[in-house]
Amino acid sequence: MIRELVIALALTVLASKGIAQETSVDTAKHEGLQQLEFESTFKVLHSTGEAAHAQEEAALVNEAYQFLTAIMGEKSDFCLLVLSEKDWATHAYLPVPGMPEYYKGNLIVGAGKNSMADGYEQMLGGFPPEMTTELKAVYTNAEGEFDMQLFFDKLSIHELTHSFQDPNNSGGFSMSRWLEEVHANMGLYAFYKYQRPKELIYITSLVDFSLNNPPPQQQYNSLSDFNTHYYELSPGDYGFYQMKFTRAAQRIIDTLGVEVLKPLNDFLIKYDESWSDQLDEAAFQKRLATEVDPFIIEAMEAF
Image (cartoon, rainbow, N blue to C red; front, top):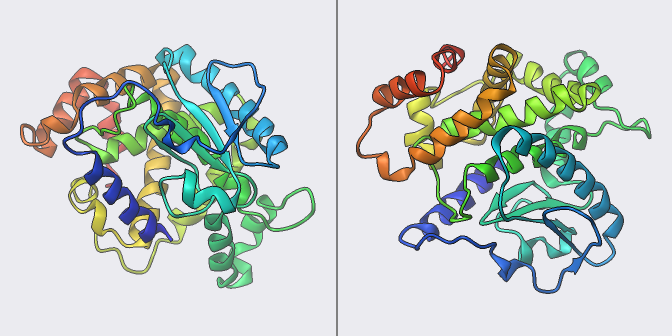
């Protein structure tokens, strides 16, 4: 599933190359959706019959939006789309139903359980029971069921943080994919640490478990590998990178505070893809340490 996500991202990037900067939301994905009556700076659209899910998601995203804008400034224009599984192929960009994503001004989330949560439940079910007892105790929902949606639902805030990295909704990227992911995980971690601390365990528990049980084979493991071989990463490598990025994000926020989110976001916008042929990884990291904070490099030493 992660492989499918990576391939789809590759196609999205290739499609965006050579296209002029855009400053408006991609409304082509909106046709046929219903608008939720919700007072906020962003529009909320949803699939038929999913108004209740849309209201719940809108409240969460709005709370996170207020938190992040107080730190980084307003994200001028974006929409929240809450989609049923049957509408996913038509209105989303990536093929993994329900997996939160952001592209060209559209923050897209699923109504109901996403396939990534199902996949992780099946994978973890293959581990010896004694290895997952504590993990399953954390990810038990109100109905007493093992439910990895308690983790994957939180990723809408990761994607919301990505939206600040693309202020013009152009679909462009910075020259460093790994730093984009660390920054997005910083926004995710900071929101739950300071706004919903009781729910933070749903993020950190899977990270802890994953880092203690790495995939048996890792073809790529450096930061430069992540940028260079982004579209070649195996599902295990990609997922393990994200867990390490989240741990680094935790260290950075715990040490530097939420204020670092803005200068780091500004840095990502400044050093866009056009810099890729001008700076190597060492030179890029030197500028990052000088222009933002040297601790960010220290936090990445695990790589």
